Amino acid sequence: MALDVVMYHAAHDRIADRLAALDLPMRVLPLGDDGTCRVDGAAVPLAEVAAEAVWLSLEIAQSGMFDDCMKAVAASDTVKWLQTFNAGLDHPGYRDVAAKGIRIGASNAQAVAIAEYTLAQVLDVFQPLAEQRAAQAAGEWKLLRFREINTTTWAVVGYGSIGQEVGKRAQAFGARVLGVRRAATPSPHADRVVAMDDVQSVLGEADVILLSCPHTSETDRLVDADFLAACKDGVVVVNVARGGVIDDAAMLAALDSGKVATAILDVFDPEPLPAGDPYWGHPQVRVTGHCSFAGNGTLARGDDLFLANLPRYIASEALVNEVDLDVYLATLR
Image (cartoon, rainbow, N blue to C red):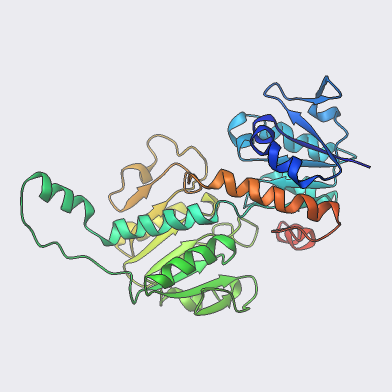
């Protein structure tokens, strides 16, 4: 029996030849911009489509249909697998999907892009790039010293696919990497790994702290006054997780006191960051508009992930980056 799969029409057009080459027992139900799927030549509202699998590719985030898609999947009596573009599952719709036992394949497609964003931003803090350009424009031959990543220590809070890609790159520069994750099990590209409960034990060692953890009941406002007090003076903090991981009042106080030398923030609560928010004009803050994922290879890696998981699902095998539904739901309580 063929597997019915809903996917965005542009995503289907992009991978149609690769799908055909897989020669799998499946039928694609393309999702149009009007929120309907083509089923046997008819336009059927997504909420009425009896599909077994749904692929929410990256385009869905920009289509304006994401919330409707999540509601349709959560309400469905037929969907058994949701492949998503999201790495973090803090959207409330995922709770409803997981509670129904629908298998979820999270995305690691953005990990490379976020890792490159992180290294670029930290290098821009350590290197006097603006002064170098200004000196060139002024025709001034000037010695400008800079800080090396080599021999620095990085604490990566949330050592999953994103954290490991950052760890790999930081180690290549000669940095020491301390991973923080749910369990203190050895992980690739980390010199040491500690459990989340022990996060404060590594903060005083870190020159750079990267937040790449899920936003759950355990990590909500994790970066509070106590967290920041445990940090080394002059630390650089990078947040590519979710805005809710940081207590903003505590962070601003730490920036004003110099405890945090620079905060590189790509995510906020709420988003977009409101006009007039103190982060916008703070001299020690680098604000970007939730774009750390936006590398030119992210879309293609998302395609690769779906195409890798499709035959795995049909064969009843474990999915790449499959969410442990019991663990995920437990973090929400």
